[in-house]
Image 1 (cartoon, rainbow, N blue to C red):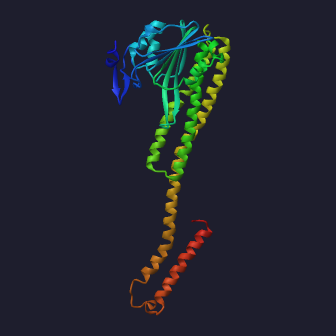
Image 2 (cartoon, rainbow, N blue to C red; image 1 turned 120 degrees about the vertical axis):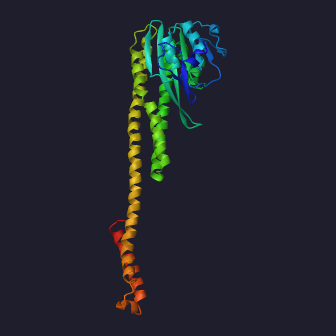
Image 3 (cartoon, rainbow, N blue to C red; image 1 turned 90 degrees about the horizontal axis):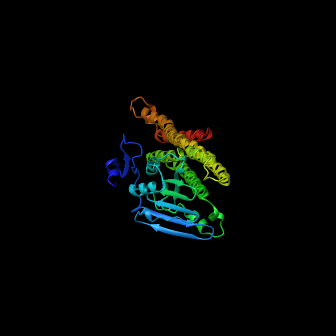
Length: 361
């Protein structure tokens, strides 16, 4: 079973890609391995108690449910056998498991007979590396169990754990549908962090264009544009997924949860509005870059023109008196040499003053 992904994939710069022509439901992990081993964080809680357990050997049979709700947070989805065991245990079809393992899925929501499935792209800003980190997060939940799938070991859901640990929070009285909403809400909040990253980056690019618009900056703008496109193409699908989630007729989604989903949709639409604005600003970076280059080129041409305007007449004068004809009275004039210098200096200053007056320099 573990050899199957290797036979069904090809590699490029550490990234795994599906070979074309595989039958639907073929389980192939298409991302980069980001953790050493798959870990299962089990959280069981009710109104009065919270219990946690960590399973690191991939033994799905050790998962036991709580009296009210069980949250299974899967960290690292590279181990296809573990994901397949979870699918068998909770009735998740291979088609959905295939979507979980394909880390470039478009955000979506699916209403199933035995539960609900959501898949989202999460973007978070790493202040240490100053990079935007992309991670696919998938969620499957029923009336008593919710399973989240993450690629990497991060503190993405740390705020949710803190809310669960707070005995005064009403979070413990909620059901998996509210937990799914809370996870998605956290993802959308991180989208806001991503928009702040793009805003700061745009300001940085504008400053660099103004101060040093070189070829390296041009490549940096292209790279930044591609990074933003990866973010932008998930915005509309995430709104559509939230709308479908809110409109679902599944009995496991309570009416009060749909109120929160309506508010979540407003937040997603706000992010979409910001993304559209930044998209226009990033496109404008190209125009600003070329405009700055043209402005600087015009400045160089203007300087050369001023220099030429001054020195062409001076060169003409020097050339005339450099011909050395015998019949040139000025050549034998006692004050001819200083007179020519005085004239050339006065002409130079007069030309510069004229250019300043006309604001050509």
